[in-house]
Length: 400
Image (cartoon, helix red, strand yellow):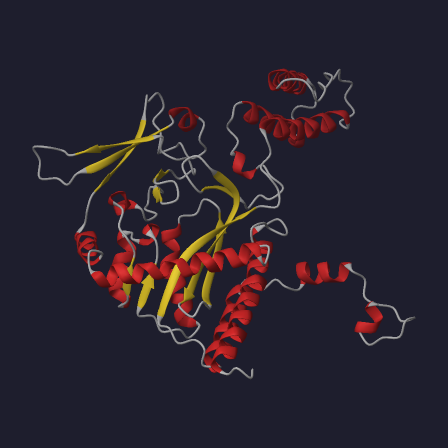
């Protein structure tokens, strides 16, 4: 059957199936492949006269990683097995503790790991670099000092939040699409990335692809102070509703951002605030502010705690002040009939996200790693763009 479609005789050899995998891993290493394929599809759309809109709609879509995060038990099992193997191969006569069965509790397995670490530390081979390093790593896991984000076969994936109570482990694809429903730019990030930061990149990539931009339509994640300033500088209108808490929603020097999906502040480690209070600050000329409270138990063991959490503190809060002149101007703008009418167009990109996920399998990664997911995104977006271009060509010229 393969020979028939390739125009070969039945007895001729065909390529080995693994050659396609080798080609993907060894030859498709161009980091700009995503931009190249999108740029090519936009070029075709312009040549065919089907890309007419000067407005782009911006949004992100979530994709679940192929592999899940490891549980603490799985992390300990893997690390203890590596340490035990190194001790066994060291040649020292050691009485290693017996590993508990699969049905034992986490506490019992932690006790076994502590015994294994003690055996390693008291052994004559403890100063061997590999053994000392593996023993230290296991001890840090027991002490909850290891960043769990990195403990997965897919080390590039991260935890992102859809709502305050639901999360996903994977990546985000940030998209810019015209009203003609042709994707003009895309960026790929890990799941915890803040949407608003990607807006200037998407605008510039769309311009580089040959799309003039007069207007950008987006949700509340994009109405940050930096984006409002950039819109004024680049001379395009930003149709994005304000959230009073979004004044510091852009990624600032301290790394705190407003997570629009969860509706609350997110710290640099990706943890969400557990509650928030409004402060009117009566008796002063200062603007009101919102104070966010974070789970102190997570702060104590957070890998980003240096410079963020003060040892011994009983609480961790973060405050934002509302609102700047840019936000006041945007607040007046969103009261206009024009704004209210144009913001309704945003639904189009939700439909495009649905098409990518439900038709092209973009709801789950095909492989592990950011580079692999970028390749998956490049092919999927190129395919949906070509389909849309053919559809539009058929509407312009029914005989096509």
